[in-house]
Image 1: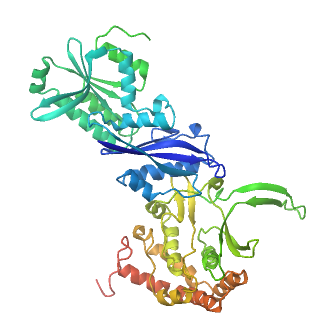
Image 2 (image 1 turned 90 degrees about the horizontal axis):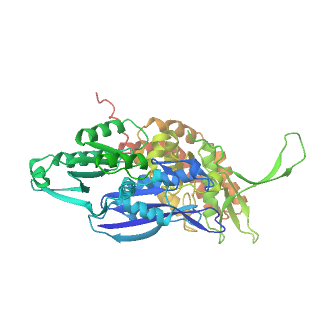
Image 3 (image 1 turned 30 degrees about the vertical axis):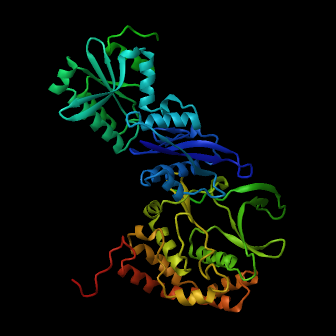
Length: 265
Length: 251
């Protein structure tokens, strides 16, 4: 899969022309993903953007780029739509391109890495569910028994789980991103529910030997009218839903579910 | 709801003027200047006349004046807008029309009046998320056009053209939003149009009599024709969001 990114830059003083990276827009075959400084649950939080001269102008640029990136199909297209103007305090610049295997291509993880590399070491609340899930699983020290990106063939369909860990019985875990308050979270919930449902099929149970424990790893966003419904649907199709956004609690809950000795606090 | 408050910001405050009782103070504001590089360039005249007409109609055009450079050239200097003088991003036309449908209709009519064929997302300002108010700017290629000496011919060729092809046009959905603006435009006094063009001449931005005459004729003729041009454009489907009225006598 080909991934391209743009870097959003800020020039506080147009005479000095010193730039600061303030965001990343990542284009993948799965769509555009972006993250900007001070963004919490898709909103700009003024408490974390004291470096701006005008918070309103920053919000206006971020809104324009994020909304347009969902309709303009490529990084070069977005750059052509909004080429840098000599007196712009905010502008986009070509970042780079990466070719990754389809299996390794989790856009949110790549975005996390790029954001940490180019913009800032992110606070936990800005990290993707992929990043947070890895942190929690690393704390559990599951060793080589933890398998990543596990595929199964069920009635001609290939289904993929993010993690498998066997400890007496198989545990199948799927990361489900609920970070966006739009249709994309619903798509993630539907896709995960279908995958978990298939894990109950006879063919799958035969391949595993035992009924698997099905675990959804999520990161909660700020509550809205859809979040409760999405959680309910996930709970219906799984044995356990764990919020990896709260690291210590998630570690405890997963540890119990996987029948492990309690990890160090 | 965005307001104009804070859109122009004082750079430096000076001492009190010291006369009268209103507490007036000296101050400086940033500006953006366009200069007539060679005599007869239309850029300054176009900017000045269009801005004055726009302001007279009540549209959000940054105020400006004709100034002289140190080497005696005419320049048009408009106030630099933007929160803390940071330039706003490109506009999302659909947002502007949805949030300010009446202002959008006024901009579309104004562009037709001044023969501005280049209204795009880069010469409009507005942001819903950033709470940035509407501003319209960059009219240097309108009116007499970009090519020095071709003004009278351009006016002759284009004065009956509809000129409604802007980035806002397809988003406008209500014919009624034009009505108030049509009244304002039709109400522009011929004398005012003459005065504005004469001020550009007096500022050194429009030296030639043919150009002066063409600019005056354009404004005076088009303000009278605009209603008919608009109705024709609506009937012809230029405004995709407005349903053309049924012909008279249709049940």
